[in-house]
Figure 1 (cartoon, rainbow, N blue to C red):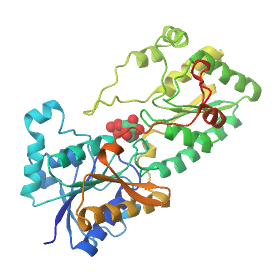
Figure 2 (figure 1 turned 180 degrees about the horizontal axis):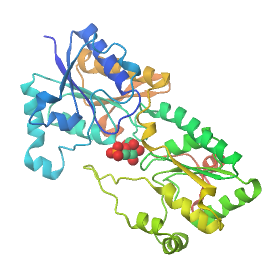
Figure 3 (figure 1 turned 60 degrees about the horizontal axis):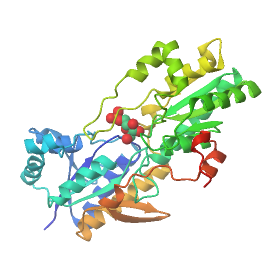
Figure 4 (figure 1 turned 90 degrees about the horizontal axis):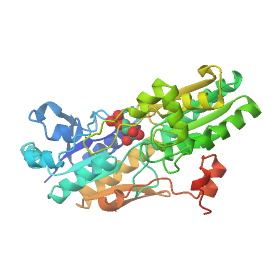
Length: 379
Ligand code: F6P
């Protein structure tokens, strides 16, 4: 008997998600006669009282041309039905009842670590799911690359380089901030591809005194510097340079005192490091005008891009494989992934191991990553 499958797209949006949806629907319709129902807003939609308002029927006809559209037509949420509070309210049972009521017996979807964690918990309650990894952070294991990452690098590198080219013409310091949460992949690859002089990543804490000295040396040598910094760059609150900056700048003081809000998975809302570093550098380098440092926060521009070819192809390949596993092989509880040129799969537990930048200091320094003297290990 043909199956009816729900499609969800949870967590931060990114390029390539719609290619996955289009491909899974085409594969399921054509090979398995499957009916698909999209559920808007991922687990928030699945748990909604008015679930029917979140439903979007999808078939081969309706997904024509969908693969190269930005973001996700199924919208998204970071709703976590498995927090202690939400489990006590009964959200997991409500989701299972909703799925049963609409006659769905499996889920195909895209997610980062948090959405995959929720899919794993639903799987452990006996509901079949297969997920594809997506995030510009590229921070889950079990795949060489996540959907969205390659497009974000391609565009982010162009944006960072154009900012730096303008800074050079005006003898300025260019300071570009990118997302990535607690993984530095985005900053590392955008930095290298845009010719950054210095790159900061969360995996290598920054000694601000040393950092400012290095930036000052570059600036006095060439009258411009190209910096790319990860939003998760870590600075010690006790760093004497930041303590000095907090005394001299209201902006630095308020940003450092700001308590980041947490999402329902406990992730802090990051962002703003470039505004702190801009003022720190002005103070430490004794710059006359803050305009000598131009900041650009690429932020969400990297999330809402239309997918480049790499991510259209990856989304399509992920969609085919995910549909074959769930519908053809009748297996579940796994995340599809790419290893070299091959599409494979890993159990959720393996996928959820965080994947932060694991390159050697030697290579990272050669690529321009700033590593404070206290942190260099001779790998
Ligand atoms: O996980 C992707 C990501 O863009 C992170 O890089 C960033 O820190 C976070 O999402 C922002 O979360 P939100 O979209 O909820 O503001």
